[in-house]
Length: 226
Image 1 (cartoon, rainbow, N blue to C red):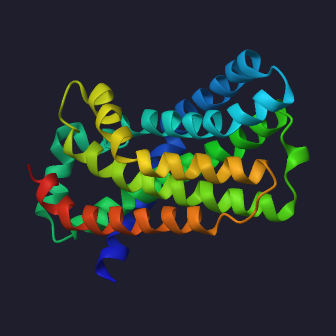
Image 2: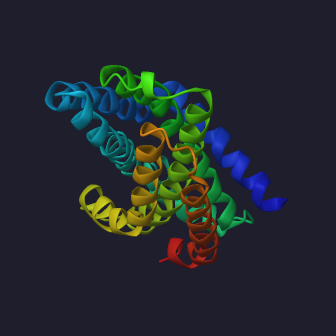
């Protein structure tokens, strides 16, 4: 309970800061929309090839937009070593970590709510999805986003003081979330092809999320103090 209460306090603090600045949300949404437009102009060729390209384009757009957010995630704690003060306080370090995960998930969720329908619209993919397929695709996207946020937040905290963090974080994060990317792309491709038997891909995404979260919660207190 203490961990969740601390996470909620950090999350509310980030919301108040973002309500004033809108830097994190604006940059993530702007990148997602711009990438969507560029991809649609470059890869909309014919139905067969478009169906093959769309899953990869969708997931790459989401992950690259998320990596842009990672570079700004700890900006407020980096000033005047506020993170050090938080770690010296009675607050649970894992609560700080979860609060930042919630902040990243909110920013990515808003970006996906705008970007993903645009991708499906520009590539004319809505005709291939019924209500069940859309629900399964949304679940897969949510699970994949959680996996990315869990890993990305941990590494963003570890590299928060590095001047090359904007370069290093994606380089390290992307190999670690490759299983999530593969499972997400394959699940989306199956749904676009009319195959709704994707429970194995969803189970794989859920399993990786649990493994990543358990590992991150165990490592974050030590890594944040480095």
